[in-house]
Length: 590
Image (tube, rainbow, N blue to C red):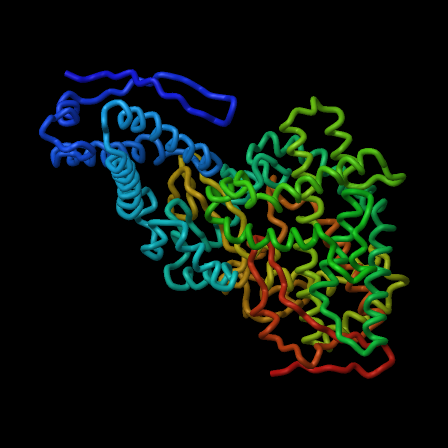
């Protein structure tokens, strides 16, 4: 027979509010007798009672894992789960303590046993019974995502850590309990191709509740919103953006001239980032922070740079970020950033530019819609996407292009001669120079803008990669850095040889794996704008200057300082720019 108690409890949320309710507590009859045993000292529990509570609590943890948490995604719900447990603890044990004498320490002990049961079941399942158990990888990676996070955070060189794991374990490596990294060449088409049945993974919830186009996981929603974005990157639209790009290039050349006249080297990593950010901010909000002109970081730029570290940290821990977003004080910068975005949107909405920008198309579609809270959040996300996604990757590619041009002056001279033969340096003429695109391609092959690849989830029925079947509901991704340097796809994979894309095609064994802008329905919408900016900067700078490394700079230091924060963040790269007609200065240290 069981004892049922209805214990009234009053919760004071803060004067003058209070809530009063009754909750039924079900207590097994033998436990009830132990609670009221006259021989038991007050505030203590008999040994059989402790055993019963520990067994029941542990078993409930195992059941919670097997019946609930083993299936589905719980990352975004992590704060709600925490609150649920706290409230459940209060409802179950506090009435029992105040009305039945149930000891507080025993209540905490029961909670501890539940958590222990939950995590023990989780670890045992992940280690030996998970559907990915047959795939190789470090044992600790089977148990927790903290393993690959720890390896990533050592130097923020996740791309190198993953490459090492593939060299040790083969094409299929279990990086985390539910995650596979796949370096098999046929995986590129199977996971990212137009006909791929995969969907975007939980990483794409990092900005929740906001969902920019890039992070839309629903394929139909993504397709609908992509149509709007495509308008902003049409041929006509790109022509309209040319004056803004030209203005930024003139400012960049002005910075180079000032540094050259002062006899100073110039950190192109910083100034290329300023250059692209100024352009994208102009195309998003019809204004610029003028970082190039002022040679100074703006608030938003500093904030985004700081956030890139968080993105690297939470790449494999998406369940942790919702806590920081919702915790007062800790979320101060997060709230400040989105308030800034809202302020820019408000100002931009009041001042439509004479010449349409990217945001014109997005804002027009938003104003035609119902304007729900979700729509407003997505507008926030799209505004952020224009600025961040459009700047980080382009800046990284530009920096690495100039790194290789400084490393190989003969290549720079060859390109320069090609540019001199053109009627002018308009983009229409620059696209006729095959070597320029070959240099850009080879740069992105060795230094991909998204070095660790993008995350997908297999469909319920699973996915075949060659002769290997990947179970359903598994996170998969192809590591770009590893595959782009795979000797099965490229001869002499670690050498910078632009001619492999022009006069030496035999050096490319499988071109289909080279997808720096991704492929399929999620291919980068801004690819054409990115290439336009890169071509024009390379053309204009080489036409005016010789390029060389600053004496204090070495090849290895630059490569060592780069960071993998989803997009590649380049290390400092001081270069010297010498006007044509003068002897180039500077050298590369061994």
